Image 1 (tube, rainbow, N blue to C red):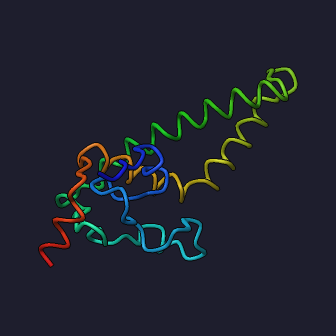
Image 2: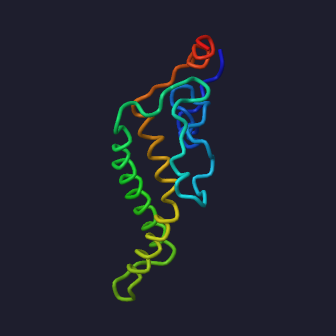
Length: 139
């Protein structure tokens, strides 16, 4: 029996939730110079055949995941900024943090959008250790 791929590592690598081996995106780099490539996904997993868009409009739910990730990242940025630079209203450092946080969120947006889709799909599709074998047997 093969070792089960790690759940969180597979998610971070943006692998198929069913087999945890197939790529979800055609390009590994979310920071492609053409923004149209951010969501350049396979329709089905190349390894196990899992269809990624489970129903029409399925990806609309990723907005909630993206929002939660952005809030979590903002809180993280607040903590490290406060720890290293301090925050007060007196010297307007809170506004400097807001600017730094906005830049970080904008720069990471392509990655946040992709990982949101991946996390959202992982809510609905579960690991199946025989998925690749079944897919190969069908074809």
